[in-house]
Length: 186
Image (cartoon, rainbow, N blue to C red; front, side, top):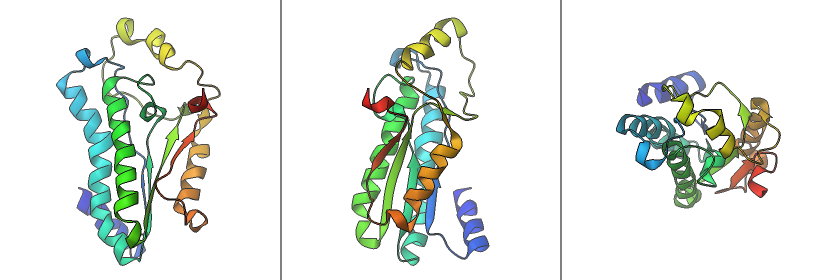
């Protein structure tokens, strides 16, 4: 599947000079003891393994273009242990590790890698899992979202991604940029 996506992009645009990894799913806000193997594997596969596989497939095209930009979407959960459940939090911490690794390992080939760290944002993200509303309902979610501040629009996140992918950010590499209305500063 990854190879087909990359081939389609190359066919449509003649090459690749920017990759934005911006897909993800939530978890059920489970603590480590309560995470099922299925939830763990699904969340990490979508949130961390997929960006890695796509990045690995795109890197030769970025090298062929003389460089380019990778922008990953992490989450406020990547900065703390209390903004989501275990699987989601671990996956987003991994996205930051992937970003920083790319930034250091491929800077000499002209590849920049940065990550945005959205706070609360209006999107269609869902768990895709059945959540026990009594154990993991609004009270639990509310506990995690303390001091979140104003919820952003997806377009606000997109504007930062476009900037990081652009030549205007040509010297920005390895940055983890919160786009969270100050939530990470609390």
